[in-house]
Image 1: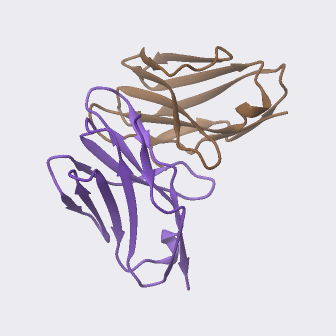
Image 2 (image 1 turned 30 degrees about the vertical axis):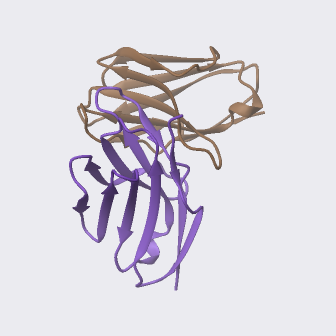
Length: 111
Length: 112
């Protein structure tokens, strides 16, 4: 494993549910990222936190709400999602201008 | 607009042969490039990186070549093995922006 863990690994939820994805990095990095990976599409950057401050928000719908309580933990709160939000959600971390390291992802299915 | 793309969606190679995966980028401000490998059911795994002040970098069985003139980079895998079967994609990064731009990926299939 890369030192970035994500839970749960799989999640099935209805459109009216509220759930949260969790990411934890054990690498001492100072930036954390949420990406969405859909079939046959490039990785889409959703949010970036640097030193626990949000520095990037790529026009993501408000039904996705990130939270970064400290430099090691990152959450993605989900509510009233749509079926088209079904995808692999990847968390990554980095330090300065060094490569990102990714977690294994959460496979999300919205019914 | 900004993009990082791959020339071929699928590449099939014989075990033991060399593989070459190509990537084109459009953002001239990109100064750092990374190749990732993603196996089924896993997150992307870092393979090798290169900064824009270099044109070649070698790792274990892998080499990345960067041609800034034509905005092209490639990943060469020597003596391809079955364990190399995965999706490979490149990412371009501009220092200080926190923004990595990823290609769609090339699926490498290693034939026995």
